[in-house]
Image 1 (cartoon, rainbow, N blue to C red):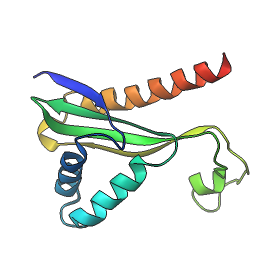
Image 2 (image 1 turned 90 degrees about the vertical axis):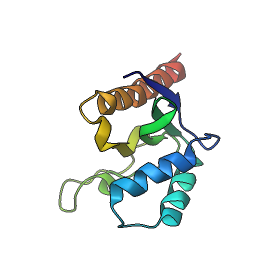
Image 3 (image 1 turned 180 degrees about the horizontal axis):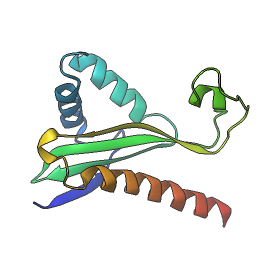
Length: 130
């Protein structure tokens, strides 16, 4: 089984396939329209980074998040209520979603998608510091 990986952003031709996979995974908890609108909204978000896993041209997984540099992300938004709250986290990566088809579990896709997102974020951070 050969898995290939392509970037996922607002110009991706795979958005409908991502919506279908997400709909399959949420087992009727959401409508395809609500999933589509959230994924498209997320894809246009500043700092969006994402990857899609393909097997024979079919979307079998995806992961995305945001590199939050210019946004004022408060730790209170990231930590459960009641824990220490510190203001002003300005440079972080918010991991939004990771989904892999059950047929492709245990094939290393999850870890590869995660690694690609983190590597891309670290590479961006290095470019900024140069």
